[in-house]
Length: 294
Image 1 (cartoon, one colour):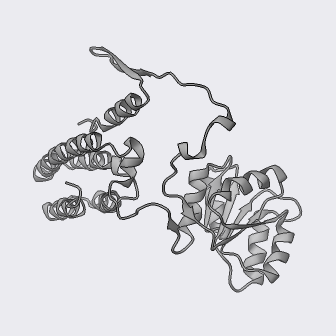
Image 2 (spheres, rainbow, N blue to C red):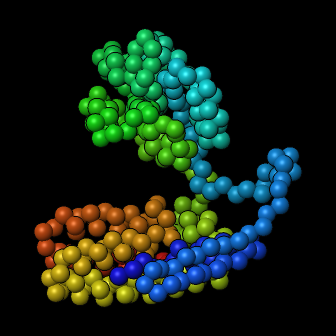
């Protein structure tokens, strides 16, 4: 039971859009190797026009204020420019004591807090904030240490979330948005193909090809899942469930069908025995959430 093969289709179309070419080398019993070649012209920053870049689904945070507690000035500057295009109001505290003083006279929607700081570290700062203030906004820990022990320590200390350093922009923004209510984006969230279009553009031919392949794979997934459950082969059933996640991955993790699959798959895998009734509910649920796509 392999994947859908959609990844290669998407890569092929992206490469061809850049006037490139793909090649494949396969040796029986050993596997296959795929490569591509593209030629690009070198541009200076001044030569690249802003409208050459299309950024989709940028959360607009202009109505929110974020306090960043970070003693490293270089990191402060980095976070300032990283968040600039999302337009929140950003404020800085150089250490925990300064953060506490700012909280006495100001309200923030979210706090990003470094763990390792002089005077008062992140853990002690959070403890004092929770003790001294009635209303505390969500606090996300920023740490270079992300072992299971460090993560557990952050949770036990009362942090609402954590993010590893060096900080990845998409991970940080996703984490921030998850704690802020009603964040709007500049994309059309009603379009179930929005994510796919960011990968291949508005090329109807390519989109139709991918959706056709996806539908074909989904039919095969249904047959295999039902057969495995009917036969009582729980291991095969769970493998097909994992494969179904891959089948719909080109629609993006924010799509309604993908969210449904992740939620229901998690519930199904917790069952000692996946029943035919649960399987039927799962299949019908996917059919309902994909009715506007297929």
